[in-house]
Image (cartoon, rainbow, N blue to C red; front, side, top):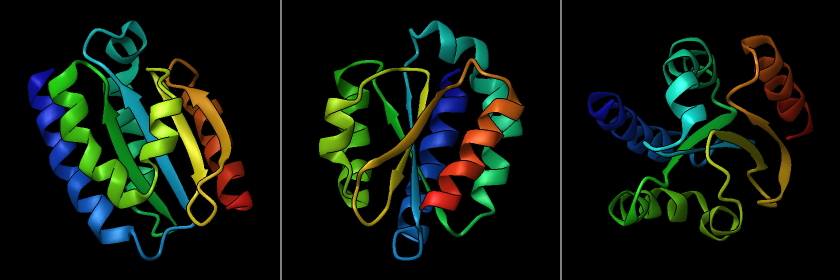
Length: 131
């Protein structure tokens, strides 16, 4: 799990800096090492959903690790760079994927990582259409 988290954070730093100017939608993933939904669905999400979102220049993916104070502090710069630190502070549900309008920073929709890939993709596509 730690290897997965390190790789994800490495990628997320690149995603935030690479897509910040072009994105229409910010996909905020709240996760935590102690979260049962994250533990059960994180690997599936990273294998099946993340690649699709990573290929879309209209989407900026930001990970928010709520595991402990250290991971929260490590997530903060990415949240600030994306302009969603305030949003993330108010929306702390772990195992949740939030879709946020990149301009207004308002919530478009949200979905639990416990949902099926098809359900997550449906919410993702609807968010892109609104963004």
